[in-house]
Amino acid sequence: MLNTSYVGRSLPTTEPVSITADAVTRFAQALGLDDHGTVPPTFLISLTLPAAERLIDDPEFGLDWSRVLHREQRFAYHRELRAGAAVSCAVVIESIKTVAGNDLLSLRTEVTDAEGLAAEVWTTLFVAAATGEGDPA
Image 1 (cartoon, rainbow, N blue to C red):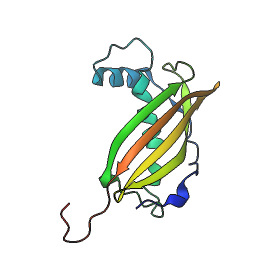
Image 2 (image 1 turned 30 degrees about the horizontal axis):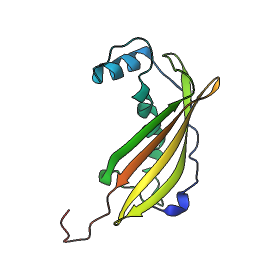
Image 3 (image 1 turned 90 degrees about the vertical axis):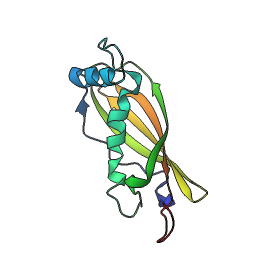
Image 4 (image 1 turned 120 degrees about the vertical axis):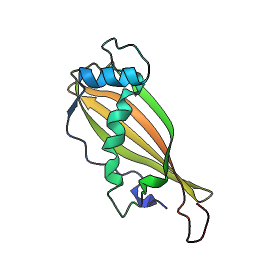
């Protein structure tokens, strides 16, 4: 079970990361998209999910990555991002809901660049309950 006292907490903002043309091209190709120099809408997941990895290293939070399934993703762009932009990510733990012993973890990540807020990304992760000894996995 995840530690619900973390709801509302913000993780430290990441150091700026440059969005490289190579990374955009590789991401677009992996999705079968044409690379037109613009950042594909879902590209930000490659930056926002790593920004939340600190939760894995926090034993008090209780996140076991081996029990996580990606459930939902939403993006709100406030302006277009292009290769060359340097962005930082600030993750907020929006909610933790327990359903049938499993947790639904909702995160909101603000993606900022030199001009301010560029996008917001909402991520929902399904965290399966730990099984007891002798229980089928």
